[in-house]
Image (cartoon, rainbow, N blue to C red; front, side, top):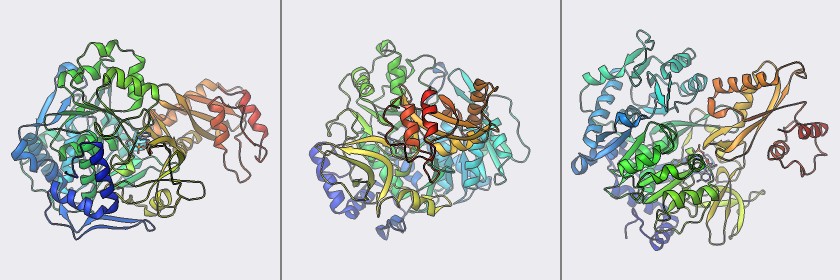
Length: 635
Ligand code: WT7
C-alpha cells in the first residue's frame, strides 16, 4: 500500500491512522518518495501553537518549479501541462506542453531578473485567466520572488492597498481582459492604483485585448518583446523549505485584508498530495477547476497541485454564461474533462437555467465532480449529481480556506461514501476538533461546535505578512493551542463533518469571502452616512447576499433614497469591487447596540432573514426603541 495514493476506504483509514499516530514519519515518507530536493531537511516538524510557530522540513532545499516542471520533462515533456480555453470559443484552445511551459517560465524568469527582481522581492500579479498568469506565478517561484496575485475583479483602491501592504516592486498586468461580451480596462485600473503606490518601479504589460493603453515612460514595458529576447533557460533558485512562496490576501472580519503567507515545501507537498487523492488523478486525465488563479483554489488546484503531479490542467478565461449557459458543458465535451471542480454558486446559477443546455453535450468523460467555497445546499448537490455526474461521478465537497493552503475535509472519491451537504472526513494529516463556548473540546458524535484544528499540517499559512500578532490573535487566540477556522460544523453519527457556515463577521457571497467591516468602512465614507451595519441573508444563487442597515446623519428627509443607494454601492465598488455591492439597503434611525456600544448583529441578521418575530431578549439593549422601527421598515 502506498501512502501517496489512497484507493479505497480501508486504505484511507489505515493512512489516516498512521498520519495521526506518527505525523512526522508519515509526511517524511511522502516528502522523500514523491518530490525533488536539492538538500534533505534537518527536521520534519517544529511547532508551537502558542507563539505560533510552525516549520516543516526545515533545512531542506528545493525549488517548487523544478518539482512542477523540470522533473516531468523526460517522462512527459510533450504532454499538455496547461490547456488554455479562451473567453470566445472560436478563438480556439491552446495546448502548452511541459516542454513549452518550461521554456516560457524560464524566459519570464530571465525578464524578471533583468528588470531587477530578486529573491524575496514581492511581485503583484493582476492578470486575467490567460496563460501569462500561471507562467508569471511560476516565474516568480523560479527566481524565488514572492508572488502576490490579486484577483483582477478588485478595484484600483483594493489593488493599491494590497500592493502597498506587501511593498511590491513590480506589477504584472495586461492591457485589458475579456469577460463574456465585455472588456475590462485592467491597465487603467493599475494606473489608478499606482497613483497611491510609491513602491512600484516596474509594470509589465501583456497584450490581450489589443486596446490603446497609456504606457508610462520608464515604468511600463510591453511583456512580449522582453520575452522574445530572453534566454530560454533559467536555473531554478535554490530555496529553503520555509522560504515564503507567495502572499495571498483574504478578508478579515475587521480591518485591512490579511496577507496570508505560504511556505515553499509544506505547501508544495500538501497541495500535490491532496490533488492526487481528492481528484484521483490518472495520467491520461484532463482536469478542470473553474476557479480564478486570483483565489487560493486556483493557486493550489489549477497551478501547483496539478503540475506537481504532471497533470493536464485547464485554464478557462471566460464565464459560465457566455456565449450561453452551455459553455461549461461544451468545454467538458470538447476536452473530455475527467475531473470538474467548481463552486456551489456556479452550480445554482446553472441549475436555474434548466437542463436543456446540458442535454446538448456528451458529459460521459466526467469521473469526479468537486465543489468548494461555501456550504452546498441539498438541492444543488442533487442537481449536480443527477444532471452533471448522472449519478456515476462522486461529488467531493471539499472544505478548506485560503489559510489552510489545501483541502482539509473531503471525501476521497470511490473510497468515502458521499452524503449530500457533508464534507465528510478529514484528509490524512488533519486533526479537526469541535469546541464549545467554554473552550472545551466536544467529544463523541452527533455534536456541533466551532471548528478547530489541533495539529499542524504542512500547508498551513505561516503568518500574516507584516503582522504576526494579528495572525496569532485571529487564529490562535480563541481556543488555546488550536487553529480556529472561523467556521461552525457538526459531526454526525459516523463522524462525518458538515460545515454550517461562518461564526464570525465574514460573509460568503457567491463563494467570495467578504468581511463586513471593510464594507461598512466604505459606506461610512459617504458624507451623508452616520453609521452602518452589514449582515448576510439567504440568496438562491449567491448563497448569501448582503443587507445593509444605514443610518444617515440627518433624517434623510427630502433626499432621494434611491440615489443614495446607488451612491453607496458606487463607493463600495470603488473601494472593494462589485462583488461587495449590497442587495438591500435599509435606512434606519439608529442601530441596536449593547450597553458597551457594540452593534447587535444578531438582531439585524434575524430581521434580514425575515425572522423578526423571535428576536429573543432585547431589553438589555442601550436603545431597544430602534428595533421596532427597523422591523416596521424591513425590506
Ligand atoms: C471559507 C474560506 C478554499 C477555497 C475557497 C474559499 C467556506 C469553503 C467550503 C465547503 C462549506 C466552505 C468556509 C471557509 N468554505 N469551502 N466545502 N463547505 N463551507 O476560500 O475565501 O479562504 O474562504 O469558505 O466558510 O472558512 P476562502
